[in-house]
Image 1 (spheres, protein in one colour):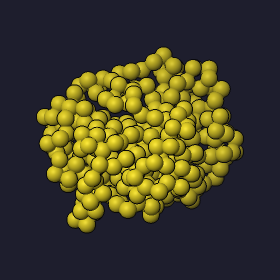
Image 2 (tube, protein in one colour):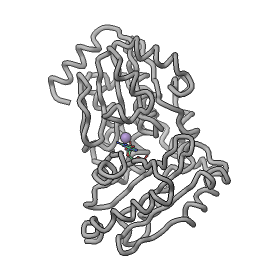
Image 3 (cartoon, rainbow, N blue to C red):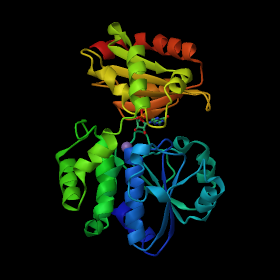
Image 4 (cartoon, rainbow, N blue to C red):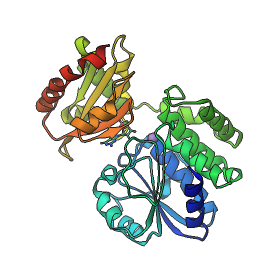
Length: 338
Ligand code: 5GP
Ligand code: MN
């Protein structure tokens, strides 16, 4: 954040405000961690804050301190709308375009509040009065730590805030191994541990929570994997019928897409997961090296994200989705195989 942004934010927070804090749809560890950390912080500062999520989030994040107070637009529709309409300030965290909140976007469009964006995705939209956007950041949680420090309040980071921020940095960096992990990220993590973050317990709560349904689905996904050596690509499909057969629950397929990249020579991995209720295939894209999955998702699958991790969707059926995907690969052969 530059000096003007920090001063503008200090100004907006100089008196007690009604504040809504919003993560993206299908919130992940970074989205829930950052919104809850900010909620704890703003509440401590005397604001009337609330976290409003577009929809529910996975069970393995429900232990997070404050998770039980999150309202969800799908379940608590009118209450959530009321909070958005009455908010004086709306923080949007871990996304940068109203298209990322699904049905909730209408409410955000008609809100009278001023917006503060804190986000690390590519190509931000222009809706925020204070826009803290930095694509080099490991996670939105690292940015919330920075934001608190720019407001001279690092001393207010308690165990709850530390646990929330640690979780989001951990999940968005693949446990501190992705490229965006810097020495600064590790210094922040060290400080969060000093402030009480329960690192071992957090790893356990997030990663050692396999259910039979998740492991059976993983088996099915790995069996379905198609390897396209000529394009250094591997893709997985999971149909609604397969999800139902193995009693899919929200969050069960988290991380499956990464298995493709563990194969030698594979630089582009994709998973297509059917959501019949929404009439779409939700798609996750991962790459290593120069191939930008953000550009690919944005151009062909109504999505976006980061250079090496992005998402999108398809409204075609499985066969047409895959055929369309396959038809795109030849034009990227050079960058995929160089
Ligand atoms: P995931 O594949 O884990 O759902 O998402 C990977 C990254 O892409 C995350 O940073 C996520 O926020 C972003 N992302 C996922 N789906 C979409 C989408 O439909 N549109 C955009 N713009 N970003 C997405
Ligand atoms: Mn993130």
